[in-house]
Length: 92
Image (cartoon, rainbow, N blue to C red; front, side):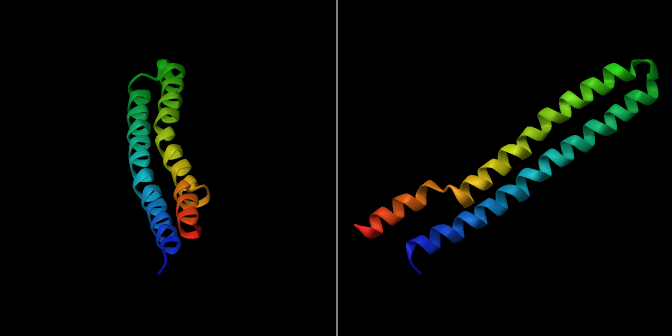
């Protein structure tokens, strides 16, 4: 097995692991935020607009963690900087 194949395998494994771990946290955080918002709406229905607006802003912030993990996975698969380094060292 050459270095390029090894880096390719490790990159794909790491990208999968990044998406697996990076999607669990935001999913649990969003579920907890929605559950708390529903409890708040049940207790104070007059504040529905404020609670809903705050919920959407909070969920957007929580979702950024999953998006960052997705971007890192795409970089590892399609734009891996180590591949250029290995190919130049192997060629010369």
